[in-house]
Image (cartoon, rainbow, N blue to C red):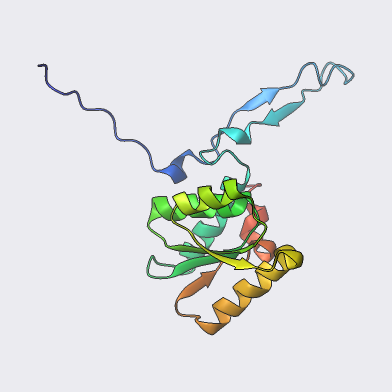
Length: 164
C-alpha cells in the first residue's frame, strides 16, 4: 500500500460565503443597448445554496464584533433560508442555535435545520413569522444572558451584507 497523501485543509464554511460568480445574461439582455452588460450574481453557489448565507454571516460577524462568544445561543425567528444559513454557520462556527418557526414549516426545512443541530421552537401556524418573532423576543427577554437574539427582520447587518 502506498502512503496516504495529505489533502489540503478545507476552508471554513464562512470562508466560502459570498465568493460567488457573476454570470452574463446575454440573451436576457438582448433588448438592452450593446454597451450595457446585464449580469446575475450566482448566490446559489454559496454553501447553503442561498443569498441568505451572506446575510446570516453578516449578522453573525456583527454580533461577534459586539462581543458575542460561543457560550451564548444564537436565537432568531425564521421560516426559511436565513434560518438554514444560521444553523449551518452555527454548526460550523461552534454556536448553538435556537430558531422560532411557524408550526407549518415544511418537513424538508425541519430536517435540514435539525441536521445542522438547530433547536426548533414551534409557534402557531396562523401567526406566521409575526408569531415566531414574538416568541423569539419573549425568549430573549426571559433569558438575556443565555441567548443572543439576531432579529434578522430589524438587523442592519442583514441588509448591509449585500453591499459589503
